[in-house]
Image 1 (cartoon, helix red, strand yellow):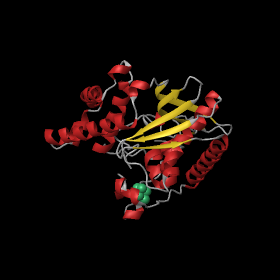
Image 2 (cartoon, protein in one colour):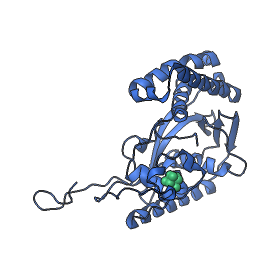
Image 3 (spheres, rainbow, N blue to C red):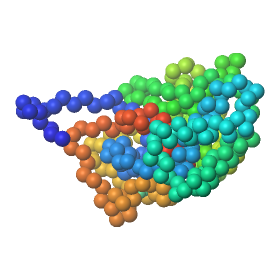
Image 4 (tube, rainbow, N blue to C red):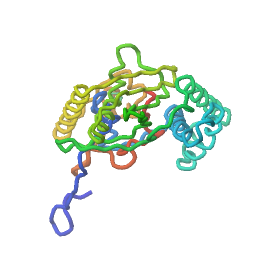
Length: 300
Ligand code: SF4
């Protein structure tokens, strides 16, 4: 790509508004180099059975609430699994290659059914009428930083109290790591507070993998602290961008990283950084944080 137009003048480059989602903020905190690979280099990532299962289970739980409340049963949820998998496969046919054979796929579907069964041990959906599902939220902070993401479910009580719910197909975090898990929820709570003028009463993470629920009641001070943290993360992203300094930060999460071959921590060499000013936010899929089998959202 050239820096100079055919008439000799620099091409007009419009950079998108700076924005941050919970997943990409978390990427940067986990490993700046991982953030770079995903956001700046936009390196492809292979879908995984676990992430794909998360996507399908989320779709089923979203569709479940289309049914009349009396029909929201474990059997109906299981019935929804095959059509939601078929829909995903139609949109992304390469996912068929995830399984060596039909037996492997069936085993995977069975594990997805187990997660759906686990959901019914945590909640009774016949008694719930969510106000929103897969709600896209977006808010611009005073600094200009745009926060954006998808909330799995938003419940609104008759009193107007908000409950933010997120489904996780992995296991609940070990003791002492709950705050890290709750960061994403505080992010959403901050955006909802700014959009609706009310601090959500409850943040609730449902871990289908271990059958546990993590709850937190945020207050204004919490959310203001989250806002300051996000601004600080963004300032660090900008500094890294200006300096071209994206350091690897090895951790146990490297085991799930698709980019070990390019990572200096594993003897690799990252590609050259793009020359032109590049957007430092995901443009297409990740911009809206839609669940994707290519980028695990809750399995690691
Ligand atoms: S392998 Fe580990 S250190 Fe390297 S980019 Fe991935 S997460 Fe970061």
